[in-house]
Length: 256
Image 1 (cartoon, rainbow, N blue to C red):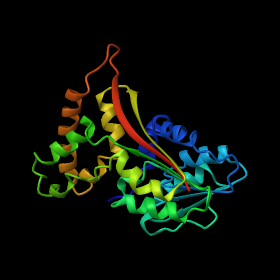
Image 2: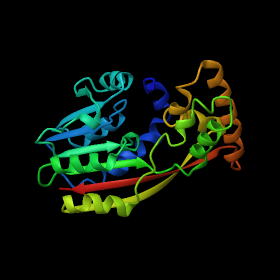
Image 3: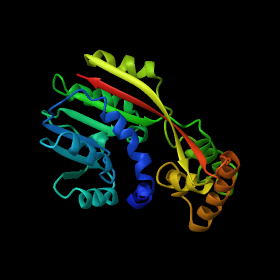
């Protein structure tokens, strides 16, 4: 895929950062020494970690050069590394591995979570949050439009651009034996957006990318136009003209 756009992602910074706040609040470590922000993006989640543990060494890792550029501008005193989580090994003395909205993009991520949890020292924490929203209209319509236009052959393999997440029980059975305590919960956010067009702007920063990246410019324009029309039908305005973007997310906090 093309590189991620930090500018597009940060159009909804407050809403995208809220799950990081909620995940961080459940980590039971008062004085961390080394904290890793996996999939740090433009540094909005890293900034929260620095505030929580100002004496700790906080390191961000990501695969996107543009996201890392933005993160370094935002937090010039912190260390950021370009790395793929599938091939990255945490340092032996890491207290917290924090992963906000990254593992839904990692194939076979359950094995990766097991690997990372095993690498933690006793008392270390693996804290993970992932969107669990593939059945929401915003994603269902991505797949429907992919199957209906002149691009359907190019996008034939995009029906599952993201893997369906395991059930909470699946995470419990895979991670529970590796830790002394595990918390798993869902939160459903209802983000207030200006209109249906804002829903499209939101998804442009994440889930839309695998569907439009393979297309030439004219096809991209046509795909987005058809998708936008369907989004407007699915997300009807509230009394004040705004729309609610329903967004379920799953959270996991595992203590080694």
